[in-house]
Image 1 (cartoon, rainbow, N blue to C red):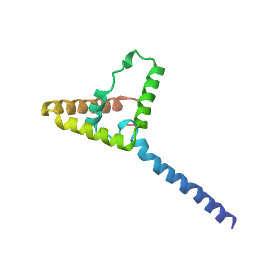
Image 2: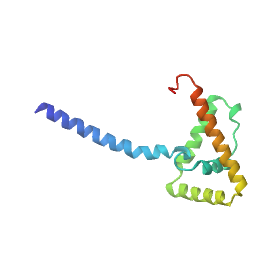
Image 3: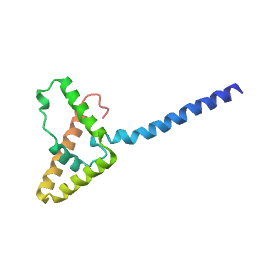
Image 4: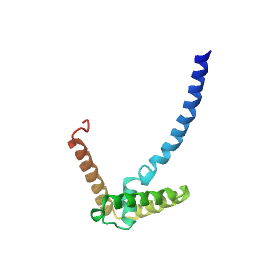
Length: 126
């Protein structure tokens, strides 16, 4: 009897926490535009943002800037994010084919570079 009560209590505790994790995962995917914007739209979005000289910043300044950028993104409502996506998509569609190709090439080069760096790091498990 006692073990069945403990089992029921354990199930009662695990079920709500699993639901909470499931509810927070989509929001985490959406952070900073990753998972929400395509790489092409993210490129356009980043082009519109004020430029920061990351190399001249201290690590604390970089962290503060990243936190500020994340806070701006998180403060946007779902409707604002949809409007932003639609605006960026319209800009993407208006770009000439050669500019689209240049953006896609830069994205592909960055992916290849990041993949290569990940393979070269010791202890990366690859």
